[in-house]
Image (cartoon, rainbow, N blue to C red; front, side):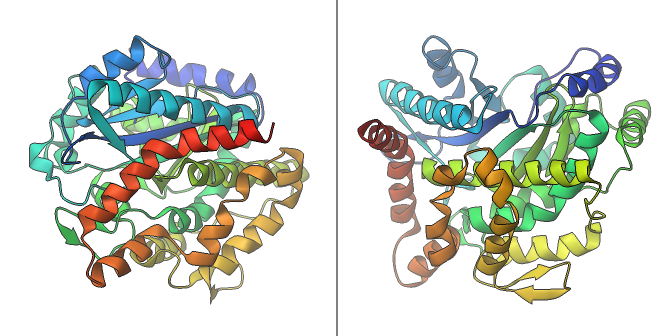
Length: 399
């Protein structure tokens, strides 16, 4: 969610310079994980121990807290290319698993936990999260959710604002692909992304934002929030897509956490391609006007409710299309960027999601067929714990 800043006005004053000096299409990826009791696979409040172990080893500077003490975030840092970021993500998850195993805990990556109640989770004691809890109280306590965030470097603040506006349109498709949260507190919710419903429908300044004409328009809005004491720092703006003032990036916060790291990387590659395409169209003067929030909300509802199993809306034609067809069309439109940024090898795992549908729908169907959700979750924890090492070994075998 972000770290506290000492002077929010100074941070805003410096933001344009960060974008002026940004490098196009550098990449940073962040994954949020459940910290789990190794025997029961229920959430356990051991963040500080796991963080300290990580900071003492290979993950120094690459882990952070995320509101509750049963959650940890792992960050790649800045990758100069997508390949750099993907390889760092693999190494980071391998290192996290090793530290977790040494500590006697497990880590899992699904958008929500199937059984652990929010009443058993503790808010971590940091300046940022003291602000969050003090302001939001119950809303913060209930936010036991886990996602993936992707930062794409975009040069020039006005250009970054235009890319942010454009990326709003792809939030439903990205969410539909990534849905891994059909459950909460012992129940199948019949949502495919319960994470999105909890977070974006409860937190203020969340979900799909309005558009901004340029950076100055955005700057005025943030100053309005600061001046009215609606926020104390810009990290209290939790939109699904936002310009990150400190990094000179467009941050996309659309996806549920995914157990299989190859699929996490594939979703990050798609987001990179879409952002790069938007930047190219802006440069060419052909970037379409941004879609209206109320139209995007219809698509977002479809995605969080049904994932890939029901049609999404093609807002250009104003017609519904199968979700997989809509995403294939986006991939085709991004072909120049996929080629230029060497994304194709990393995108391959999307084929399985497009053919078989989102995980949440498949897991829901299995529960309705008589399987225990805790057993399905245990499978996903095992995938979370092993997929990075397996992918790294495969890559080494193929040179």
